[in-house]
Length: 152
Image (cartoon, rainbow, N blue to C red; front, side):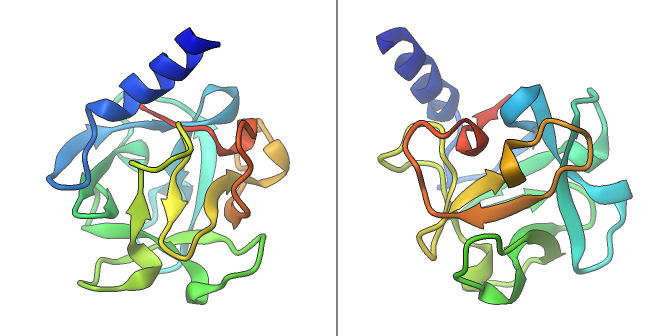
């Protein structure tokens, strides 16, 4: 158990929101990667889980001052309409300074969880492991496999 906690913490130790980190995969349940659906760059494009594919631009993220930035066209991981309800989906949207819908925390008390500034965790819908499973916000649950993430 201690080894698992150390591994989770060490995965996040190399990623800091204080500066930019480029070209990282965000890996969740079932070894799937956080992915921009179809690589579309339109505001509102759904974020989903997909098989990790090295070099796939749809799965490349960087971290800059609390934002999770999709490497293509400077889009940010964004909460739809700033919703506070469980099940609120996430999307990509033009990065906007000070936009609360785009603020995330990796350095929190729950190892391996990514927490939105509104207090909810980044969550894989239903703990699904099939390609295309949507990503949403949900109440943070310590140890929930659908809320554990690693940065590679």
